[in-house]
Every structure is written in C-alpha cells, then in structure tokens.
Length: 542
Image (cartoon, rainbow, N blue to C red):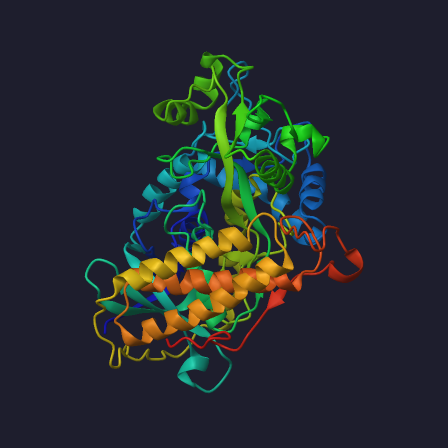
C-alpha cells in the first residue's frame, strides 16, 4: 500500500474545500482529494448566491436577526454575528480572485442583490443564476494552478486514521485517511499533520433530493465512526421548489424566483401560502416545504406550481438565464405558464460538532462547510447563508491550523499500517448493494421526511439498524467498492437522523412531528448530540 505524505489533507472540492486549500497553499504541501471530479459538489449547483450584509440599507444586526429568527432558537448568537460580520472581507477575497458578482443594469457600480425567504431585505450576491458554478470554476482554476496544491480526483475516502485506533500512546489525533481509487481499485493512505473534512452534505440519504450523486454524508459517517460527536441531525432542510419532471432529476428552482415575485399556487390556480404564513411565498423554507406537503396530501395532487408570469420573457431570461433555459428544455415556459414543483431533500443543518474555526474534538481534524455543525443555522438554515459559512469558516480553520503548527512544529511521523482485506473476495451479488441503497433512501423518505411521527421513526430505525448489520457483513465479506462505501455511509447517516429525530420530542424548525406539534422551550431549547464509541452502535471494521 502506498502512503502519500503532505502537510495538509483537504477532503472535498466544494467551496469549503477549495477555500481551505487556497488559504493553505503558501504554508506547505496540500493534497486536495475529491471522490469524483473537482466540479462535483453541492457548491457547484448553488443557484441563489451568497448572503452578505453589504448594502447601505442593511446591517450585520439585521442579518443576524433574520438568521436567529429562522434558526428556531438554536442558533448560537455569538457564532452567527461573528460569521456574518466576516462576510464582506471574504467577498472581497473572492472578487480579488476574479469572481464577478452581478451588478444592477441601472447602476453598474452597485450589486444586483437578490432577496430570498426569511430575509428582511435584499442581501444575496449572485452571479446570474449559476452563482455556485461561477465561483467554483474560478476557484478551481486558481487553486490547482498553485505548485503547492496537488489535486487527486477519484479518491473515495474510506475512514480516518487515528492514533487511538492505532493504539499509539498519548492523546488521540487524526493522522490522515485511507482512500479507494475509483479508477483502478487501489487502496492508499494519505498522511498529514492536519486533515480538513469538507465532504459536503447527505441529500442522497433521501429518495428525492436536489443534491448531486456524491452527497452521501461520507465525512459525517467517518467522523462518527472515529468517535466524534454529531449534532442536530434531525434538522434536514427540504427545498420547497424542485422542478417536477421525470427526466429533470430534481432540478432546483432557486428561491430567488420567489424573491422576484414568484407565487406558489395549487393545481386549481389558487395561491395558498397566505393560509400558512403572513410572509406568503417568501416564508422560510421549513414553513414553505410543510405547506406544500400539506397541500399535496390534502388535495391529492402530485405537485404544486410556481407562478412567475408577472414578469415578461426579457426579464426572466436576463435574471434567470439558466433556469429559463432548463425549464424550456423540459417543456415549461416560465413567462407563459406556471412551473410544476415539489420539495426535495436539500441541506443538512446538522453535522460534526465544531466551532466556527472548524475545530473538532479530535486533534488534527477540522470540519468545514455542510459537513460541520457550527451553531450558525440552528434548527433551520436561512437561505444563502451556507456559502457564506463555507467561506468564512474555511478561513477561520486555516488560521487555527497555522496557530497549532506554530505551537507543535515537530510532530513525529507515525506509520499508517497497510490496508487489510482479510478473507474478502470479489462480490458476485452487486444487486444486494443496489437493493439496500434503494431501501435506505425509500425508508427515509417515507418515515423520516418533512412530517414525522413516533411510529414512523420507530419503524425507520428498526429497519435501518437491520440494514446496517447486513451492510456491515457485506463490507467484511467482499472487497470494497465505491458503491459499498457510499451505502455504508448513507446507512450510518440515516441512523443518526432517525435517532436524533426520536430524541427531539417537540416540533422546531425543520423537525416537525405530528405527535409533538408545538415547540417546547422548557425541555428542548438545546442541541441534539449523539456520540458513541468509535465505530458507532454497529462496529464497522476500518
């Protein structure tokens, strides 16, 4: 087995991973490992933009108030204020790298700020309607051009390597990770003094999601198996408006469309959001997703519709060029007819317990971006705060790493043992993996979705626990493949979500249960923490 050495290992090539590599590039050798190609990430798909209090009529106080209100009482106000206040500086960093945010047509020196659900003013910087792609494209070119950064695509992280697992004396620390090369099947180790988990979210845990196929919760599952605390996994954000079409694969219709006056209507052409919230179609995502779910179930409809016909074709093509083009591709002209939409799993507010500098309980390991739970989002994420968090926390994490390197400059090199396959053989039962994959995702959609009950959660957890036992045995008996590793991870994350949901016997933010429909501040105004011995309740072999 080959062992690759570096100063800094960054796992994931979304915005958090790229910014981490960018800030680290002048301080040592960086390996940027991503399990497919560099542009495969949630960040690349982000349409709306980056929320930042940058306008004259806005302030950090106002942005903080909106974030806290949306967060349902679980956001950490100190963390919120600190991250939001750092936003303008990091926006300037992006612009310094060549990223161009859209400007107003009538005042070209001013940003064309968008407004999304939960925001009291326009504060969302965007680059057309493909903000994430434009940002990632520029960053990828800049980061990979630096001689200190080595890009390693098609490397699927298997597990973190810790001194505790190696039974090395002294405090437990992370010294790197095992990887599977998706192209040639090679297993290798990458050893580093500092490892950054920037593996993104876990939308593929659900049957319907706006996330790309890579979003299988790998970082959260690896951290849990290493014994780290996982926080607030019950808070899964379902984006209210994904395009409803059999071939669209849950293409996202940006919340910015509602920010420009788009109205949600039912199949009868009636606007319905006013029944659920005074903010109508611009209510926060948890409210809108539940309202759509309720309308569909009570009426027996398969979808609702987003009506933006108040604007003409010229405006829509200018403001939403990519959305307009894709909708037209599937037969829907936004300027002339309402667009069918449904909710889909979108963003995970929970994750690995960290502070706003990405520091975890495991020395040498940092977590940034969607994989981390910093205290910013609380029980519900305010729209377009996620890219801002990735920017700011990546910078904070690097500052923390550099301080740590100054205090501990001479860490000894600890060998990573060769990967042991034991008696594992090639599998001739790949159909089992596909079946279990579909069963986990269907179970989560049916029983741990937008609206929950005790009975549904208990049923889900029983089935997921059985599946995890089956998956563990398969993992031990057969040589690993990318599909097996991803199945192992989504099953672990599914258990974390279901267990967390069962622990919170109230409704708050994105967690809504019919058995406890009200918020209970007296007993549940706190985070949900799950921390098990390394390996979790079902011990996984490394």
